[in-house]
Amino acid sequence: SQQGEEDPQALSIQEGENATMNCSYKTSINNLQWYRQNSGRGLVHLILIRSNEREKHSGRLRVTLDTSKKSSSLLITASRAADTASYFCATDAGGGGYNKLIFGAGTRLAVHP
Amino acid sequence: SQTIHQWPATLVQPVGSPLSLECTVEGTSNPNLYWYRQAAGRGLQLLFYSVGIGQISSEVPQNLSASRPQDRQFILSSKKLLLSDSGFYLCAWSDTVASFSYEQYFGPGTRLTVT
Image (cartoon, rainbow over all chains, first blue to last red; front, side):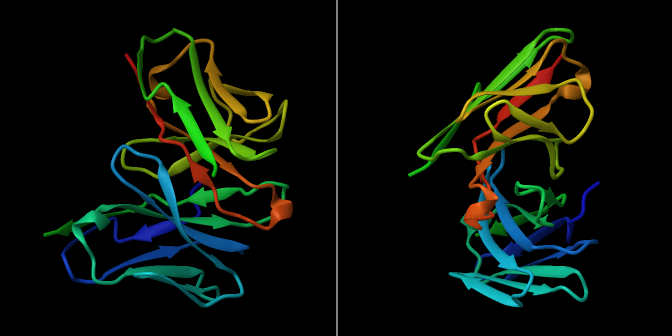
């Protein structure tokens, strides 16, 4: 079963606008990660936030984590057409000797020039 | 730098035929390796993972198997494909958990269509 659920499923915005995607999960986590996937390609790791962190920045990306609500958000500021892709959150519950990630179904972002 | 390769990029196979997808990683040693399947418009489902040569764990019962004959080689196989095996197959690697590095790095994927 999928732990992460992204919201919205699809988002359409104009270049220069901000895009916000949300992720909810069900169980305790060690960390939460966001990945990007261009159509028909592999996933690219964007950012990781640990369970004891509340906010993290990387370039135009801002991720927040609220462990009490079991939710995270990804904000892309000043979006560009090249940001058009699907974005996935993935939760890592830790343990087991390997990094078991559970992915949500993703948010499809379309940025129009 | 590390690189991950998958081949073939696309594959069309008839029902009942065998399957072999290969994944290799360069530039790292003793990685954890993963096979995922992605249905159209969906998230990723973990199929298999491996923490070392010959060590394979399956996440879901299915028509597929995996093998790791060498440290940086991961193979996904089937003896007889089903229509439901169609999908986008992604291989990924990560450092061992002892490194406290939790990111996974994905290959370009194989698009499999079973007809």
